[in-house]
Image: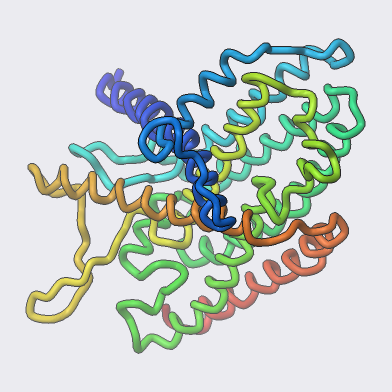
Length: 368
């Protein structure tokens, strides 16, 4: 039995969950409050700790100490199960995402499986069960409407989500996410494949389907995570909170954490597929201009610093995308439900499908 592999895997799981994901979820809530306050010309959290930095800790204690009330009219088993189903898929999606190169010779990915993107779609789609169960088990009209909205919304946008990534894998040739990052290191990021090979016509043409894929995939992730302008399952003005109306205390907190964990997972997938993953091309000059690869595979302190730099690069990109999620939420109005369905079925589905043929023609007839 390979004890080293088991030990490093456990360390990566514990580190990602307790050192990275849960603190990121807590401070994403804090960041959202600060961003919304900035946009609305308010102060935001500024009482608990310096600049309000301890506000997430105060929120955790508040939710833990609240009365855990279960209404008499609910279906108790499914009512308790739903919050767990909402949080767990968002967290375990991270398992296949390469969040760095290597650190002390250990690859910075928990499970480097050869069907990485299929795993992501299979696990992420389970998140809808938590919302639907919450709506149904609450035995209340507003949560039920929120659950129904969520199921139809996720079915609509999962098609676009899946079709949007096919051009990426037409180019890379396999479904392993580490291979996608390695391809982008060698050939340029997916949203800008011409960088480093400025005279290649095929790569300039390839930019068109890749940017379309990036835009469709990113908007579909907004819809999958129930973020504005696609937050119809919650829609406070219409449904009084939607699927989590009947929840309080830590069960409500699990839904809240699940939404932000899904945002982080979605941002991590976007970074991996289109923005080079942990790679950051740094300009270097040694007898001619080229891109310097900060590699964690080098021996000694260079390898350690290089690995840490790549991990920091990955999470900096994720943080930038999270900021865009927040910016959009506090800038755009909510769609009407018919507009949401029309956008998913009559625009994104057809655009993503046509984009596959466009990418296939470019890959087949132009040297890449």
